[in-house]
Length: 295
Image 1 (cartoon, rainbow, N blue to C red):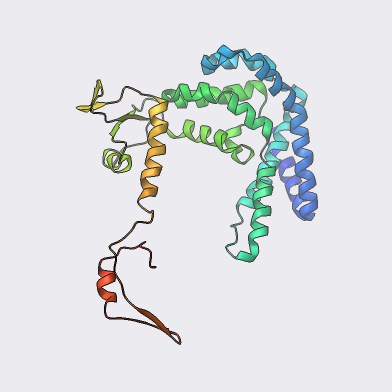
Image 2: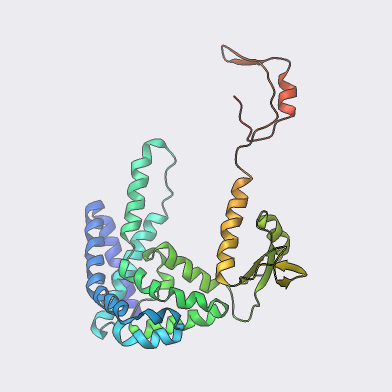
């Protein structure tokens, strides 16, 4: 049965490649319309079924609550899988073509990005995001959650979305990456960093570490909690971890920002194709660093 789905997908993909841009574009629209007719209504019903207190449900409780609503009819499952696999093949074909660096190819690169975006399936993306909070709140059991998601897909009659990443938006992709990286049983890695230099502080603590969930703490002179012999702020979990990555990115970017070097003066003259500098230039350069601006 799966082999027949794969044959249908590969046949449609080859057919679309032989007919040029118009045929490929039309096929993408037809496949998106087919998937939308199968899933959009059930996704809306699932969201309506979730009450305000459903945000605190565990992944297993959420699947029990929504399984009946999200069921794909038996007679439609092969068609859904084939449509999704075909879109993945079309998008992957464009991903294998590196974008051009020439300025004349800006429009071609934009068209490539638009096509990749046209292969993202909104209903599948929305479905994954319904469960995002529940999966992130149980991040220490990510492998078990991933297997639970696979079982859930089988029960609903959905394709395996972890193998169809080009059909998902960035947040849904990131969720599957997170579920796949860390094995169950690996303890969290504790990080104690300052807010002013989180990158340098973390670099030494993570040296040689295996993949694990980060348990982040920020140093604080008035903190009431002790971690690794240091006073830290009271927060823990997903909030401080998210803050750590934001601060680390800002820390790294700041090292490449422009700064004012020690002022110096030297004369530069352009003669034909030669650039001539006055005798003060070596002294000016000796007190400069890569990235300093020349006025």
